[in-house]
Length: 465
View 1 (spheres, one colour):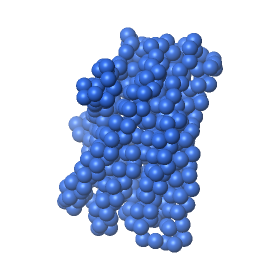
View 2 (tube, rainbow, N blue to C red; view 1 turned 45 degrees about the vertical axis):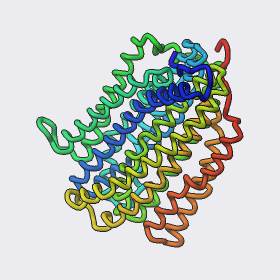
View 3 (tube, helix red, strand yellow; view 1 turned 90 degrees about the vertical axis):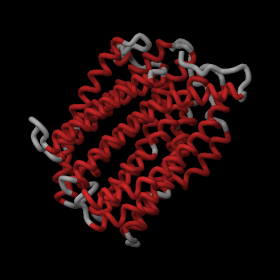
View 4 (cartoon, one colour; view 1 turned 30 degrees about the vertical axis):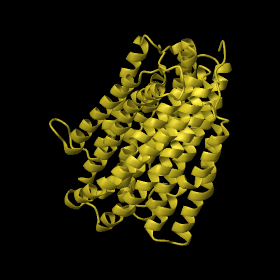
């Protein structure tokens, strides 16, 4: 089992050193995966910017479908990871294998739904995000070619998440990072027509993603059938509902609902901006990429918290889990400050690149610096909320709170206020953008209050499931 080597006294220098060493050992490989994901997104943006602004905007808006799938899968995989971590901490390997089978079954169902929706109704989906016919046409081409990647990516995301929860963080990072590197290479080949590859533009980006996902799933399948730690067993995917399934759904449904509520709200933000102008969509697509780089360690730390706290609580080390949670909050603050600083430092470099190499309008170049500044402080709220909701609260099975929190903060505040500001008050684009991205700070005080109640501190495992 992957556990922290504790000294006899909790809080001693030796114990703290062991904790931070173990936390970094889990955080850094996950941060590498996040970095590689941000890298492929930035590569898409950079390469498509050489095609035209419509392709850039279409890729950004069509990417909301993948974003929704990813958020649903993040909720599903986080539930699987927390249950796996707690049962792993308890020493129950068989139940971890059952959780893996259950989570893959639901990932297959959800991923297939999005694949079929994007494959058969791409025009309708794009019309939700833009009224620019050139953007819609480019988006239809993209969605029809990329739709198969949704079900494949769902399976890979869930599988690698469970592997991380039992200590196989390096394996997960290597597989996913190699897949992302291949994606970037294929992007370049298909966009620019290198060697024997045809020059396909936005279609090439979609094909590169689909091919990469096929290879990633093949690798995960081979690994699953040959792993000595946790085996992938098809019988657990076909197993009838029992107590474990009920426990899994009790966690997975609110967690997936939480991430879907959050993801749909972000998609509505994009739709609001998309109906204001193509310029702000293009600028936002670049700002999002820069922000993603600034949050790779923040999100990696939250994932590490869910694993470490889950293992501790599964082993009934509740006192230790409480101390670890406090330390993880400190880590979230520091990683957010560093991430925000990196965004500010990168801003001049990004603007120089945009001015020299990228074919976009002057409006985009004027709006982007302010967007980057807004995102520099936005990551502080995002990092702390992600740590609390997705890392600490979920590690003890407290998943419903996050759902209600995001429903109120995003759908009770940000979405209606954003719609009013954009289409009733008709405020300038950047004012709408600023108001939309206050949502993380609206919910932060309530999240801190909920953390201090300690109702999330629970062992959720059962015997003989």
